[in-house]
Length: 268
Length: 307
Image (cartoon, rainbow over all chains, first blue to last red; front, side, top):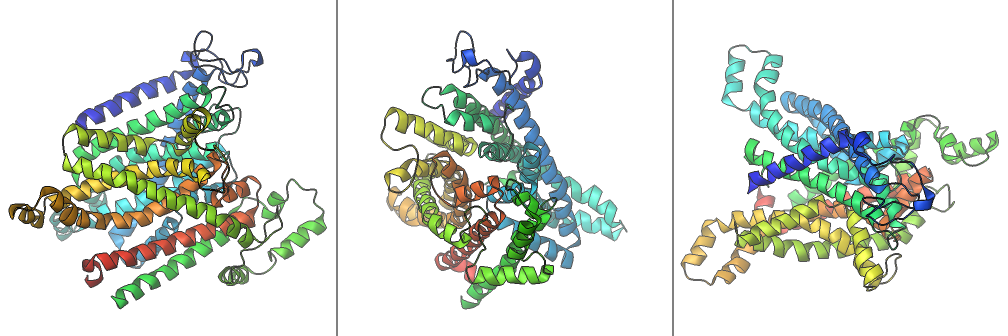
């Protein structure tokens, strides 16, 4: 059942990725082209998923939104891993004062719960889609720093590391050849789950008006715009909402499955 | 026990120090001149800019500015909002009750849904009950709160007209926001309850209780659930932080007054003192709540305070 879930996640993600890559060719029309005469059309004949308040094609906008969300997720997680993993590696491997200082800094970042840290960073960087990626990425740094540090700490105590040291292995050799491989599996699992979280956070920031700016076809933004037309045109917000949920669900399924295969210890 | 408490409380000091330093630095990490950015939309003369600088004490050396920031914060003075020209502390005081209500009500919803769901999943492990509960929990984890909120408005407000869609104030206005936030938080609680319960059910004392002929439900409630809930308490602290942060989004969805909308409004209006003050307040509250949770944890689990 678990593996079936992972396969389902992988299939959904594959389809989403293809749709996102092919969006410019698959879209029935330009996602930001307005057509005031055919505004707020219900899904069906003219528009597969309906049209929004400016007569823009919801189906095209949802397809282009997939592009943005997947890219935003990948870039944010790359930033988080790119900064968090080295911190955790250094902190766990060398220990001592350096470790203490780094971990106190991470503790401070963890004092800002959930999306609050990303909000604070966006407020400093000024709103915009690019800054949302940076903010969501930076806000996730503590997660990866701690994860990698914990993996390094447990690997460091292994007999084969001691053996490598005994035969005169240098720090760099030990770090890259014996410790790093232990870090990769949990990093892949957490990174996959983190993609979902990053996409949710980024969409939330755009929903709040702090991310993508109009007329960009971005899911969070589309939901915010659809909020005002909930009564007349449910489809404006429903399809981007489904898009976000399906994407995040797929990543959670895949992440859970990968965890069972790669790193059963992480199981909650 | 006392030493444990003292240690735990003392450990908060450096974190709070770091938090104030981080929030204080926000103003200086802004690319360009923060004053010009904040006043961008007003017509500004050099006089006004100078006045603003003086008002924010930006001409003093940094350590002195930081000292003033902390000293003021300790006295409950978080500066003055640029837009409303009112003390930030007053703005927070007016909004904190609304957010606290939302967070507490959401927590109640999350427990009411999450614990039974996780319990059922554990008791009927590997049956359709288990699979069903965990699929529901997975959907909850993947659901954007802002979309769930819109769906709630669509169904319960626009169609059934049971509850108001927007605004705050009375209990009726609390129902949909807390259902939204609580449902999403319940997913994590359900997953945790399940795994914690499965672990406890495998313990010797549960087998002993069963072996001596106690009724299954009695064992589950009195022996297993009681112990299974202990690790879940720590999660309440973390979850409370997530609820505070989640309130930012849900308050916007339901146009409900609160700290979240204060922050978002502040960011959009480039009202830095307001954003700094509110962020500091939320982070400090979160840190303090976690201390309280840890203390409560030490009371229910003697292993913690001894170890």
